[in-house]
Amino acid sequence: MQDPGTTRLTQNARPLGHVSALPGLRFPLLVLAAAILLLGAIRLGDLPGYDDALYSLQAKGILQTGDWLTPRVGGEPALEHPPLFVWVQAVFFAAFGISDPIAKLPAALSALATVLLVYWLARRLLNDKLAATAAMFVMLATPYAVKYAGHAMTDMPTTLLFLCAICAWSLADDNPCWYLAAGAFTGLALVTRSLTGLGLPAIFAVHMVATRRRRAWKYLVPALVIALLPPAAWWGYLLFRYGEHFLITHVAFLHREVFETLTPAWRRYTGALEYAWTLTKSYWPWLPVMLAGLVTVIRVRRRQLCLLLAWAGIVFLLCSITGSRVLRYMLPAYPAFAILSAIGLLRWVPRRLVERAMDRIPPLAVAAAICIVALLPPRWHAAETRAIAQKNSQVISSGERVYLYDKGDPRYDETNELEWYGRNVASILITSADLEKALQDHSLRVFVVDKATYKQRIKIFSHDVIAEAGNLISVRLKRGV
Image (cartoon, rainbow, N blue to C red; front, side):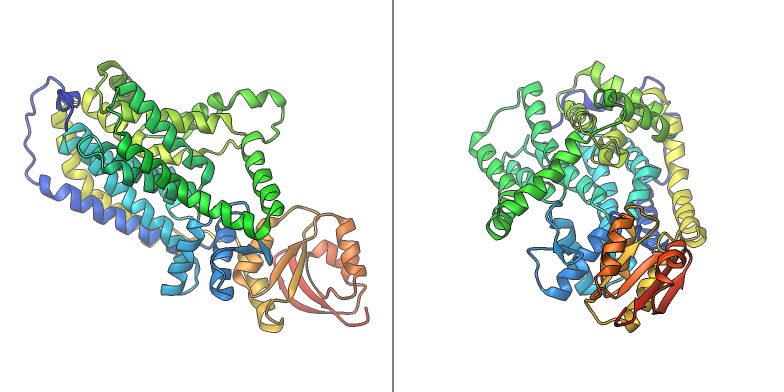
């Protein structure tokens, strides 16, 4: 059901003056550009260690152990993050093999599906094919979103699940059965990134109150139950299996994410300003038209378009009140930003100019995507640790633990990379006292250390050098040392 007058929202008073000769090619060409760019980019580089390698080694471990219910890191249960993304990665590994590009493939496919759904939702809300095409292009040509489409992380899958839930909620205007689908996608978002997923119920509640939508409790209550089932099942299983240990670990993780100590302390109250400033610096070239679209939607007060305001506003608010000030946490709001940008563009730029631009942009987008994928050099984040891990795997028995000490820095990225690229379980030694204690334990044999530490503390022991790469060196202490 289209809101009366919605079409006029993206029409300005100037005559068209131009009728496109090839309007039917815009959508397929943009789909082709998106597929080339987003899927081709997964070949560009390896996996950074903090999140990419962390999730990927959990998925690899699922295939190695057969334990789908408890992903592991460093041989220990991973009890902080919900497991859905890791499960999807494991399915892809089982189907296509374990590699860096396949680890990134779920995120890339999520980004591609997001671009397509932005077109569908914009066309539904605005009843305007040109505006929908513009929104699709904005989503595709948002550098920050493209960047995280090439990461083996939960950001783009969470964005897709948000968008699917919003689309289902929009369709519930016509058929309340779609509330059940909105609940299902909300549940999946909650077991992909729990804190961010909480934004969906808040968006729906705000939108329902603001628009006075008819409350179809016959469907809303089951939809809420469906949304809560996946996280409840996950929590219930881990509570049953690990009891208080899971509760302490996961609650501590949530507490760090929400109430992380910031320096100076007054930053606790500046989240909104920091995110606004970060968006101001990063959301280019679309920021001006996005703001114009935001103002337009506020002024015209169209019932359906209130959903965009609730969507963008709730995600912004949730990010602002947490301790983690990372812009990628706002990616679930980027589809709303893209549609708002299309509204602003069509509201303030003569339509004939947009028509002409959208005739030329799709083929140029295809050419640009091909050039980027073919010519952009890969970025290698784990060159040192990958070389060490691969050499270790040739001479160390599977499952043997490797101990990392790198200048006393908490390099969890390096331990994740060692475990992802090798067959060994990696443990970190953060302080010099940890290193000394490990050296005194004669059962611990394999160490990966920085070269300065090797010269100062390891070289005096009888040992064999296993591998050397960059600033790192891997050694095995001989028995009796």
